[in-house]
Image (cartoon, rainbow, N blue to C red):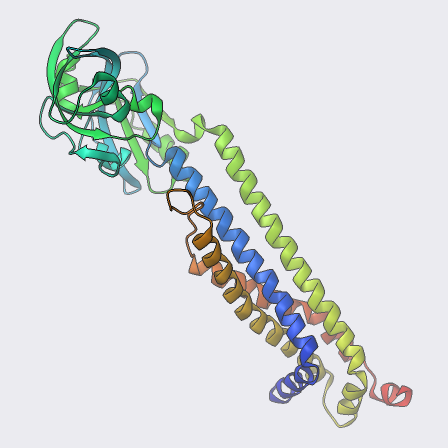
Length: 379
C-alpha cells in the first residue's frame, strides 16, 4: 500500500500540468454542483417563504355552520396554532367608510402572520377593542395611530375601536381590507361567545402539512362538530409542481456533472496506463504484484478526487459569496437568499471523491493485465 501510494504520487508529479488540469476539471464540476444545488434550494426556500411563510399551512373550519367550539391542538411539529374569529364588517369614520374583514386572533396570530415584523408604527392589539389595520385601509379612511372609528356588522351591531398599530401586509388587497384585533373583540362583535370560525396552524416542515392534516382529521370531530381540515398543498398544486420541477432539474444537472467528472478521470487515467505501461512493466519485472499495480491507479484517482473536491468547495463557496454580494434587489436585500449548507457542501465534495475513485477502477483493472515481458519486449 505504501509503495503503491508513493508511486502514484510520483506518477502524478511527473506530469504536473496534466494533474492540475484534471484537478481543476473536478473542481469546476464540484463548484457547479454546489452552486446550482444551493441556488435552487435557496430559490425554493424563498418561494415557500413568500407564498406560505406567513399563511396557515393547515386550516380547520366548520363544514356547515359558521362557528365551532374551541379545542386544544397539541403537536411537537406545530410552530403556531392561532385560534381565529372573523367576519365581514364596515369601517365607518366621519369622512369615509369601507368594507373590511375583521379578524380576531389569539396570541399565536403574531407568530403565524409575522405581524410584529410588518408593523409600520404602533404595537399589536392586546386589549379588547384595540385594532391594527393595513396601511392601504388607513390611508383610505384617513386615520392614523390612536384614532378611533366604528365597526358595524351586517346585523347592524356597532363597536368603537382604537387604532394601536398600522401594518404593511405586503399584498394590496389585504392592506386595503384587513382589520386585526384580539380574539375577544371579534367574538363579541359577531356574537360568537367563545366560539371560533377557524383554526390556523403552521408546521415545522411545510412539506409534511398533508400528513399532519390527516392526523388532525382523526380527532377533528369534537363534541359532534363536523370540522373540515385543509392544507396548503391542496390549495397550491401549481406551486408544488414548480418546486418538484426545480428539484428534478437540480438533480439532473448534478448527475450530469458527476458523469462528466467520472468519464473525464477514467479517460485520462486510462491514457496514463498506456503512457506508463513501460514503467509498470519494469515494476512488475522487479517484483510488484498485480494488486499493487492496480492500487497505484486507485490512489491516483483518490488523490485527484480529494484535491479536486477541496478546490471545488473553495470555488463553489466563492461563487456563492459573489452571487449573494452582487445579486441584490433595489432595496439592498439578497435577490435569492442562499443558505450555506455545510452538510450539502461536504456531501458534494464526498461524491466527487467517490466518483474519482470509481473512475480509477477501469485503468486499475487494465494495469493488472499488463504483461511485463510483452511490455518490455515491445518497448
